[in-house]
Length: 256
Length: 280
Image (cartoon, rainbow over all chains, first blue to last red; front, side, top):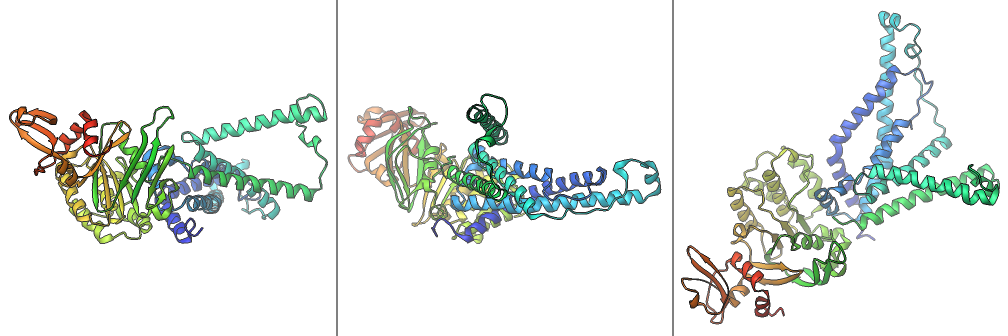
């Protein structure tokens, strides 16, 4: 095990990825901050700021879906696969990058961008001619910036669902060599459609007969909220771990 | 160090590139890997570093299957492909990012090789360099890693004429008894003085894998004016300088290996060459 998993090599690999991507990451951070600042500037008062906002989620999923883009390019694939670190170390570092570094980074950058946008919004409104110009417009009324109090069950729930998508898109990026993001989206759509058909035609038959309604829930007994939570978190954890493991296996079998 | 045992490989199952290939390579040599286009030179090198998996048989590096890509194997092995991905990093950052993976990496050597190649400035961005300059950086890095096995695919492609001579110089500086270099090339004249063993791939098999001494011990390379002087010639080429011949060296006469001539002789008379080198 020591042969295949070394903390020092993991740190070296993480450092090499950081060095390799830092300028790209900076550019991405600036773009996200600018976009969020724009939203902060023009949007009406939300009342509170959500750390795991939709743009953050979408960007994280896109990053996950393009993680192994280099495997589609033979020379880049060779460079990556021949770095002296084990597949387990490479997979673990990449997961940590997505689930910690990029997640925290995106939350911070988008928050800062949005906050700066809101500050600019209020500063601009302090100018008499701007105030006069936008008088009455909803999106240009001064407001207090506030951050939503983080409700941990809700935050954990969102984070868990996001992790499921990140793990699926991560696997998609190693499974599909070209256009991985698009192919993963299409695969998810196909899977959901298949689930829909199963629900309608299999569980539908069992419970309500043929009919175009979601009926799976009717096939199972009512559960207490606590049991529902346990099953929901448990299932999502299993899905995340499953796709991490599949990513590792696929990477181990990858040729260049 | 490198052991191929009954290796069969093909990009499709119906058309194997290699069939039951066996090969044993030891340290202390610079092997020239020769073969026609599509013979499988790059594929063979990729299999050696675990980038391609054998359909049958095993490829072992340092006694372990290459396809496991164990870090212990990879830190003693470097594959320099014909086209290398140029990272968006300066030379200094590239070294800082990747050198720590190689325990025997030497910054002094890296600087010395870059100096030999007349590359100045560690702050230059690799992605903005010309193809030849990138190649010089990667060659310098590959040699400075001091790995035991170095696989180079067409390393002189893209190098200008002075750089090719510099390449020979740095390779000679880096070679020692502990290391094994494999250089795949079509430019045999570039590396004539460097290679001390030859591997020839043809028709999905290794026809010859012999040190240069063993080749000149068994074959005689001679220039004659009349082919009748070498009645048992295995191969001959008519040129302006005379007729270049390859024949069996029954008299143990000394001669200088002409790699290109030898390669052509192998392709034209494979059966006879295999018989001479006891590969039948």
